[in-house]
Image 1 (tube, rainbow, N blue to C red):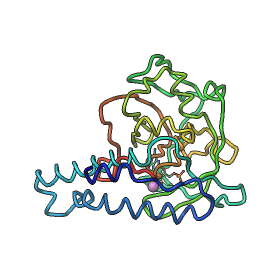
Image 2 (cartoon, rainbow, N blue to C red):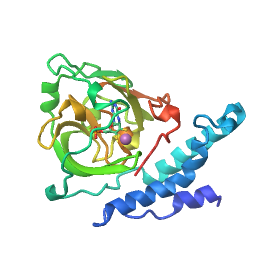
Image 3 (tube, protein in one colour):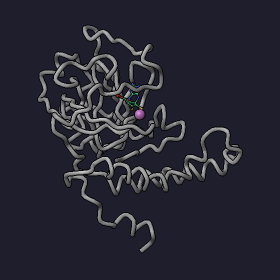
Length: 256
Ligand SMILES: Nc1nc2c(c(=O)[nH]1)N[C@H]1C(S)=C(S)[C@@H](COP(=O)(O)O)O[C@H]1N2
Ligand SMILES: [Mo]
């Protein structure tokens, strides 16, 4: 058995055990830190990254890291959920720009566009999304920048939506294009995870612009930057789509 095989077979700690979820998340970040550290060297300023061969080796390590994480964290293990009393007051806003630049999208003309390996590419209005079954969750959002907060989101289970549009669920990736030129992508097993939702509401009311109106992907099994806000288009594809932060060196899988 190779070291990778051993790593892939190692029993996984159970995320659903109540208590100290932040500690667990931190430990996972720490574990991942070791795996990701080499990949981060490829980021800015560092002389070593000027060498294309080094760059491609480090890229290879990060892609291996994606596969290991997919095997360890993929599937249906549940992220911890919380009580209403644990919701963080004044849930933080974050984006790659300041709050003064928050996009305000017109919900009356907005349509969710579909592309790629999808049988029914008819665009979806907000009203039509509301006709699908809705689910609520109170979960912790963990930002790679070093903060986390508990919030309440509700919307359409993403698996339900993918099935409804006839998505090829054997495809590898789902890409999200956003109204603020942000984009990201996730692996199909995480897209089908029971806690991954196309969120329309925050705290029981339509998402305000700062939290991603009209629709955001809420995926509590991944870091915050894998939760795209202001979604405009969804593409199901086998071609690696990367993402805004991912293309600058953040690990693509980024599971919690
Ligand atoms: N469209 C879009 N989605 C985005 C981002 C962004 O800049 N644009 N930032 C990501 C990051 S890094 C975080 S932490 C969360 C913040 O979401 P919040 O403002 O609802 O807390 O949104 C994520 N999704
Ligand atoms: Mo973030």
